[in-house]
Length: 447
Ligand SMILES: NC(=O)c1ccc[n+]([C@@H]2O[C@H](COP(=O)([O-])OP(=O)(O)OC[C@H]3O[C@@H](n4cnc5c(N)ncnc54)[C@H](O)[C@@H]3O)[C@@H](O)[C@H]2O)c1
Image (tube, rainbow, N blue to C red; front, side):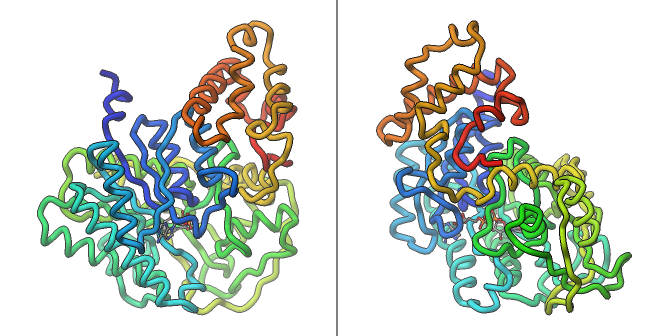
């Protein structure tokens, strides 16, 4: 049995699967061969009313050439969540590991709506853990954050730094409190295994430019904001604070490419699957700090666009610098980040410039998923030999994937199409002339 086949027997439940990090995780899990059960209440991911799943996950499955099982589920509604668990167990017998991404994450909003944040992030996690335990899964990879360190006294920040001290917002506190709950659980119940991954600043997008971060409204984070300024959607960037004790006076952060972040999750998963028990936290970052002005420069270079900015007063609660010591993850999980700030900016720009409105879009009649014409155009861009390999009629029927009853059939066909097009070298490189001619392969690929 190949290792890929052996992973087919391993089922991973991914909460918050339709969101930025969850969707990239689903893609990596599918590509690695795991069974993926995706759950999301869709408060922060976009779905077309006519389609059964969030757009991010439709794209994930097409990129992976494999299907996942999606549940529209709410962590706060325990009875309906329990029904979902019953259904999962009936179909897959067991859940091996849960990757728990679902949370509300806007720092500013958490100050305005603290109860909503505590309820969603803490009660939601409690409901999830109780049901995992009830249905026989005691392994969890948790999405934590560098915010648990507050304003740290040492740089770089290592995992031995105190957590929970000087936290300035409810969002950060929910991450800290959830870690404490998970630690207590692991202390009390010996066979729980929890790995908490403390992300520094995840940025970037999948190299295909088909999935990425799609903030609702005005972005809260620097890089998506800069990307929208570069794309002309926002007029200018406000840089909060130019008088910090840093090399150029602007705040310094440790940015990590989403693909590296997800590789860290796969390593943590492999570690848990080797029968890890107890609670362990790891920093995921590059260990390098970049200032806001560094990011602006790198983004200018990647996009070739001007990024107008103005330096304004510091924002309450922000700290001068934060970057991590990621050597523990290297030593114990065998993980190191390999992508730099230029890779991050290039990949964000590819995603942003091709999906000017993120996943939200009018259905474009020329989109491959929605238009026979577009599909024909794609097929006609293949060579005659490749065409012979295809059953042309079959591929026209791919469009039936939109019809829920034919989703399985549609995905099988999409996978076959993808294999043929990949083998012809025309889909693999999103920048290839063929890809540009047909605007491959989805709505929202405007450039
Ligand atoms: N993106 C970052 O910069 C960052 C940094 C540190 C930690 N994190 C953590 O990583 C995780 C994922 O972040 P993201 O950037 O992908 O966020 P995101 O908002 O893009 O994704 C979170 C997903 O969870 C879903 N969700 C929220 N509450 C839910 C509930 N009660 N039931 C079911 N689904 C629910 C949302 O609809 C959304 O699709 C979060 O836990 C976040 O706190 C993110």
